[in-house]
Length: 324
Image (cartoon, rainbow, N blue to C red; front, side):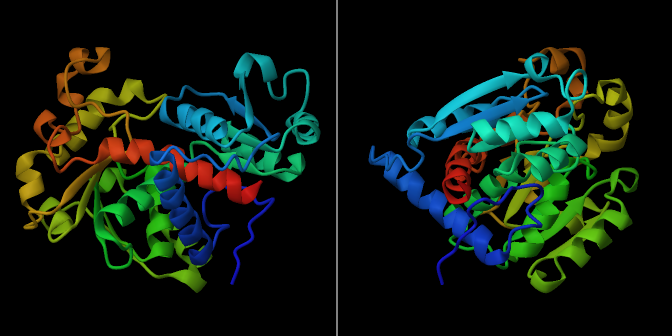
């Protein structure tokens, strides 16, 4: 049956079905194959895309820029100071202006603003990171897993680190819908709320193909897993919590020793990036114990973090093609 998600927005991935997410992943894999052969279908010729980013970005911004260019669209980037939601003009009014001018909006910022854009723009709006969800990241994660293992159903993934952030929230949705068994390995103080887990499971009730377990036991959490997934211990705006997070998470650092606890020589390492893995950043120089992954894991042949980063662009391209 043909898949039609034209005009749809991406908020959290809850609004997309298993079949629709699978379609996006397979489309991204095909678009990647075409790009590697230097074939560009230009599906978005004469289309206009707006990027409104209230927060800094590397992979998400570059992914939209390159994906739009490859597909023949014009992309315009609007920094926060050019838009200023709610200062002299409401989000509702700005959304309706952009909806008359553009064919799609990528937004990074506050979740409440995202929801207003979705409600009033009348065109697809793509969540490019809010404090609640990071769905374009997890689309790329799922694509990377499928490329590596040939399937999603039955794959075991251990997320190790801070269990209360936007990436974890989106991983929960993506894994439940696509049949991945997710273990969130985190101290009890940083575990996702029971209310959040209950809410997501209720929203996924008709497509609960994977599972989610939360544990503070590292050995039990990573045993038999195909994937160890990491993220920074300090999200944007939490820099004042560095010493507190080091105290809570130091034993959760992903090292070769932790990787060996999977009892699986084929276990791979994924990370949404940016990662603190060496002393080439100001943060790691000032706080060397804040590094969530060792250099020898990050740079090992089992690390697929840059395949994962590249796949941000291919999945975003598939998303824009399908929804515009």
